[in-house]
Image 1: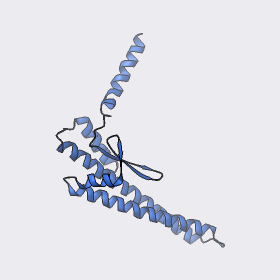
Image 2: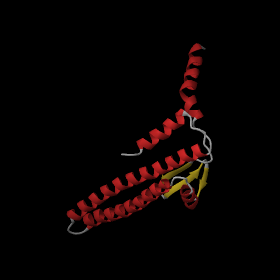
Image 3: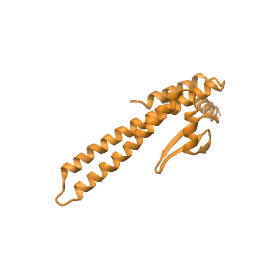
Image 4: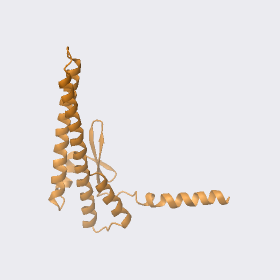
Length: 160
């Protein structure tokens, strides 16, 4: 009896802070990258790319949209580089006789595309984190210490 009660209390102590901070506000923006592209959310509701962009543009800090926009552009460039690199590797290995120089050059382009894409996604996530912090503070909702630490650690962990 005592053992099961102490395990239950330990479980509640460990997971109650995370359960309490999981509450989603309607003004919180987020995006997820899937196989077919990005999906955008405001709170728990899925929104379109145009609505997401419009919300970032309406932010009181113009650097938020500029950061997101440059990250999105860099992500598009990374997509083009990854396609070109993949084509070069495939063509270099499939041609008779095989063109190893073209395959190696394509591999280098793929590595560059990966670096660009990681940097682009971190810029986009940083912009969304800044938007969420400014929208919460401007709406009169003060962040508690746990939320502030989570947002700051998320922002720093996504950068190089």
